[in-house]
Image (cartoon, rainbow over all chains, first blue to last red; front, side, top):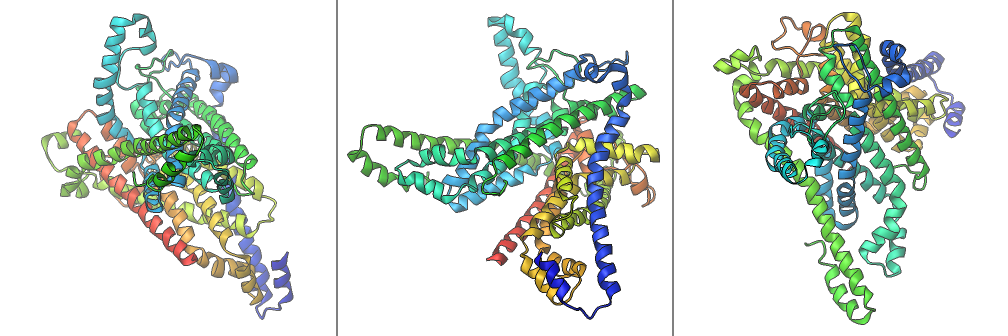
Length: 326
Length: 308
């Protein structure tokens, strides 16, 4: 390579010890720091597996995965309810937030004048930085009472009188429930989906748009036929990354989901997710097996996050625009 | 509304001379603009409402001088109106966040240098994948890791373990950001340094890093803003504490209070007075994050202007 050739030609007046030893030491340190990060990722998986080994041994990998009982009193553990809760809230949260997020991204990348786009972008990025607990306290004192009075109770009473067979789906109107958690989750991942979709749309070459306009397409037709298909991979990868974030979102969900360990979950009744059960029970776990089971839940959470992130990374590489990933 | 103004004259002109379906196409175009504006408002409004609620509910608590100077104590203090506050929490947050910075910045920048300055290193693909993996992991798992690695062997919850847990959150972000900004620096700058006879390590430390300084700092600030708001990893590492620690060392070696974790416990407590303080903690936390964010924004903007 050029740079090494350049350094070889020049006879520097410095001592070789300064040059050779310094370079070696620097490279060793830098690579060592890199290895530290690699080690951390591996150790994370290993620690979760090691500390969560006991439940896996007792209940089996699939047994713990599909076990529907979580009972610290009888020392019987299974993670299925939490996986169900995590998947329901995350999928519904993504479904709720995807199209509005895409709308904001299109608006700021294509339609808004520059000054307005930069305001929208700044607000969106700023909102991504709102801490989870702050959203949580708002949820407890503002969103839950509001939803309880204006949505959950009226809907529940209406169903009670007009469609009683739907009551098992709705469940008792608890306020802290799956619906509340989903709404909050959707609010929290909107900025991420938006930012990633916006970046994907901005990477679409100008010529793509100009060609469509030259064919007489309206502005929206340019978006629909030329820009969005081109940015599709990046948009979907961004949505999957947001989904991964929703899966791991802890505090706001733990504060609002109601925390019930028993299936079946109902729309208006309390539920739980994998991160929420870890947060709520880890500090109070006294039985060794209880603590180990929470670690095992963490291990399954690790596996799910890993799969989701790998899929997103694969999509980003697969649909990279002109060698640039989003 | 100002957005659609330019399309106005064109629409009326073409509609007269073109086939009938053109009217429908333009109508759909206008409709989509409307939908996009509605989507934007629908997304931004609730999030701004959250900010507004936190500030309006919390600023009262923040204005009390004792909020900053006193420690929390038992609920009885808040109920009887004696001095109570979150002074110890803010102090603890500074200690834990500062420690996280001290750990994460050198390691993260080092890994970033490895990725950008030694692009042929055989470990780089693995580092990139594992770094992204670590970045994608929920923060709560990093808390479990710090618990298993530090709290269990030490036998006590500690500010140190909390700092390490937050460092785990920051590390991959710092590494990725550093790699990104160092890569923008043209190779000719490095070659110029090498041509002058500088060894490679001096080139990196004296020419490449200074040239990318603003970008690196921005990356660190973004990572910091992200980590400073995390409560989940702190709940079972720093744990929490209702009082000022007796000696400075106990902020590192004993359980210590942090803003996000305290906000959580105040919010789920049954006392109205503590709820008010929780909102106050929310304001402080939000300001903390927003200030970090704005500073990094200004830095990025200056960088862009310098590029042009």
